[in-house]
Image (tube, rainbow, N blue to C red; front, side):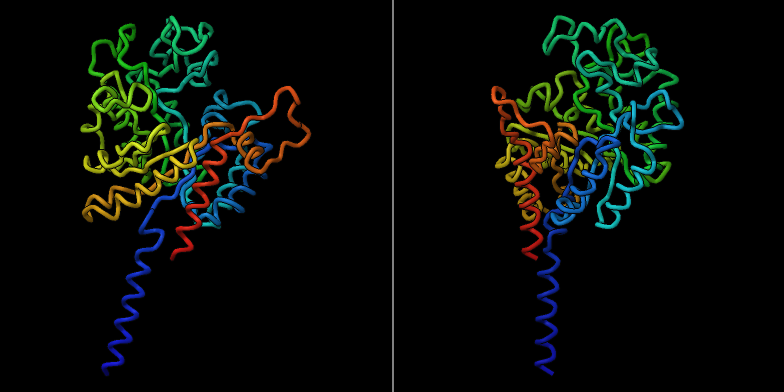
Length: 373
């Protein structure tokens, strides 16, 4: 009998050790990247099957924006966009490997880039928060016009009908139980020239838009994810106006629903703000990008945070999401060293892309975590 109980004890110890596996160390192992082009789907499937799946990535965020053949608003679709058949292939590959696939469409901010006004404000200019600022005046940042990326007006009475048509359609197309709304680097909000937003508290405006999007998704049983920079005080923390807010939106952190996944990005240092979000009762994942050593350090920090805190706080510290900000095709050509018939010119050698090495370093580290089980 004693031997029997000893055997049970050993089994229990082994089971407890297994409980400290990769899912316990790092519940979210994510990758965020632009959705592939229509002709780049097969190459992207290779990436899912040969690289993301073996690394035990379990969350893939695809920035779709207007790269889909929308039926509700075809006027918003890019030329030669992803079709439903393309999306079905991506969905099937992710399901096969247990990867949660989440589409992203930038809401509120990032409605333009440089001289290009993106589809929403191009087709519905009445939604523009700053119509007096013309994207054709863009040179570079900073510029005399104060132009970075345009925003839509969150209080326009018609904006959400269009936006939610798009959100619902893309979530249905991807069979998604979550949606990433972007909402980073919102410089234009509560502007004086806007007849609806003028004089209103910017943190309340930001929180109101986040909550409106959240509640719509929740009514469909879907989770909201956003970038976290607008919820951090850029001056107090010293994080500045890009990784955090100078325009007072940071107070919205106490006004938004507490079941929104915050994607807390930092690319220059391994800033520890994930703990701040967790202490506010918000689920959070740290996000890195182009520095290989820094990105791996951010993964290790999240693992350490989870191992050295209370059960309650540990539940909010969800994991790590690696981000890529080049095109999917450009990234994968560099990742696989496959430039086809486009060799570099002798007078313009290709410079090393540290974001590619950073992605490889993180995926390798994920594999190592899995092998430790």
